[in-house]
Length: 275
Image (tube, rainbow, N blue to C red; front, side):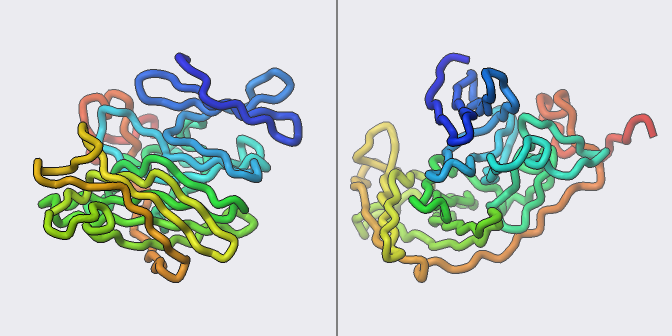
């Protein structure tokens, strides 16, 4: 570990510790009586205001093409209860496969679910920061599936609402180029932006702060595109329910570490050993 970024004492005496481990892993430790009872490899973790949930992006190795799956870890459950069902073809890694997928809707959590068998038009890039509502009942975040050509990409904001058991309902609101870059006379790069802040009002209003980003914060895309930070006032009525995506376990074994390093994903022709 090179840095401990956050320590969250829980009401029951446990602690949740977020620590950075190079090159690209945040390790979440659940600590009880000075002993680590669970550790998770994740990206962009955020604990809910009521301290029941940890939301995060499922981690994958930096050297493979992965897709951002948003996970929910339930601190009211045991580590074993937070694991997906066992599978002989895709044995779980407790560090990387914990939690349930709350986005995209319809995805099943299994070993390698974020790098195997994901159709190109469903690969989600750079969700980044997840923003909790004060009542811990919903989360908003950036959504971007990069299309080719890039100008065809459809940026948007996703709202996930949770019931008392953590079951998600998923909604999306597309963003226009003008909402990313205030100027209407430029072709803004739809990939070059971030959701910086989200404020949830008591009346259901959501105030979002969207900003372009590049090496020069005031510019995005080509040299004549000057953009500024945008504030959007939305309500849940502005979001549309998202249909479930088809994404199921493949019938071939999960890739090995060597497969991943050699970019053999998926390993469709590799036979199952010891059968």
